[in-house]
Image (cartoon, rainbow, N blue to C red; front, side, top):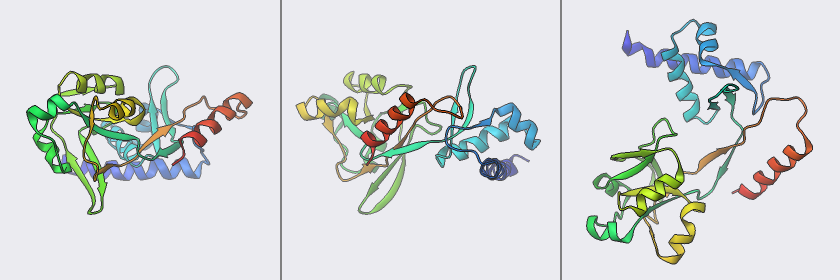
Length: 214
């Protein structure tokens, strides 16, 4: 029975997305909540969670928590060169500097727990794309916490450029793997579902899209 669940989850994921598109939903529109979807498709919430993970990995949906939370059609803009793999020079002197993405398997990596698979780091290079399941003893839920762990000699992290860029230029930390580029990450703009978006909100969204465009 369990062996069939991933297949069921994939089928449910396809059904959720097909229904969203047939309903004419747009970025920012609410698809529903886990319980609603479980009732709608007559499956367990476990299967729904697996289906939503599939849609999240495809960057088709966004999940939020809280009273007004739920599952929404994603409105994303991919930012080029968002992440830098960085390490403190003192840590690298003690543990060695990784020269290739696979060398990360010999290091302790600080991972971001906000992703379904935070320890799955994907890189692009002239040799193609490769996925590394990095070893980790610490997971955190913010970029500042990741960088704080790097500065505390705990290990190596993939940190957003706006957090680490200045310190890389100053030499406080070292950018690693210059020939292996972390794949870009999406930034989602989330706003309440409404038929009429205020001019102020629309201007802010357009500003973000222009500023963060590749």
